[in-house]
Length: 87
Image 1 (cartoon, rainbow, N blue to C red):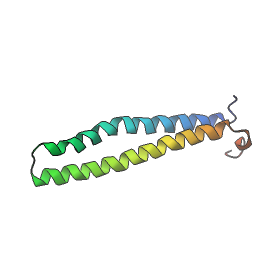
Image 2 (spheres, one colour):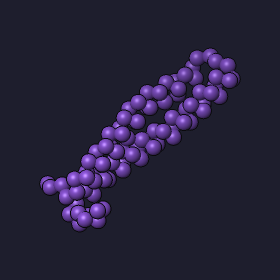
Image 3 (tube, rainbow, N blue to C red):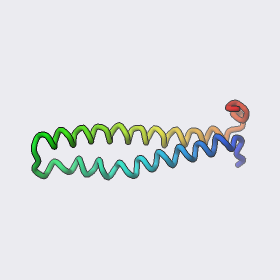
């Protein structure tokens, strides 16, 4: 298999790695906040943790989007018909 557009392939790899890193580092934090409900805490901390949880969910959604975009860019770079479209 020949890479038709090397620059696009390289950008796809970078975006894919960035998405994977976001997913890897945010998922354990989300799991921790979901399991934190078992312990006791006051209302202010609960509201603060809930806002952090919402931000983490948005961030992991962006990570999944970057992951899918990176895969798409890599696939596009391998197709012959897109060889000169992005230049």
